[in-house]
Image (tube, rainbow, N blue to C red; front, side, top):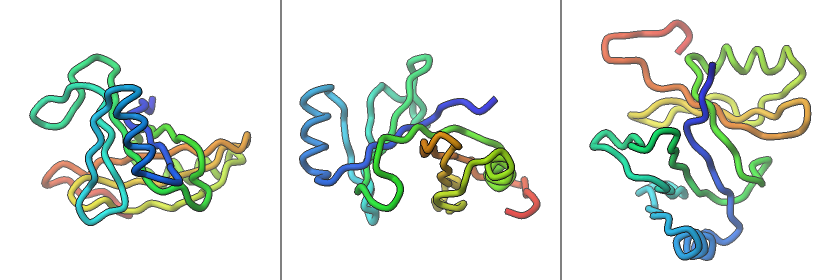
Length: 134
């Protein structure tokens, strides 16, 4: 079962959105160097960057563009390419194919048959592990 592991909020004016969420909800929002993306910290984290509260997740904020125009929930899957194949077989479509986030894992976006866009996340294989087609 794929669990929800992340959320993303697109914004037309990221500075305005950061200020809003910081002041309204007390979230910590940190720009990612070299990317037009900010990490949104909603809960305390351990030394590995994982939320310490059961069920807690953190997220991100980026420019609103393309088909990513509304908040997105992101689900953890073992194999993005296999999941995207299933999505298409079941009447969904790929919005953004699998992309690597260096040193972390892979991400992709799909649209379900109802028109909702969701994100997928695949962790990098553990050291020494290699997956076919990766």
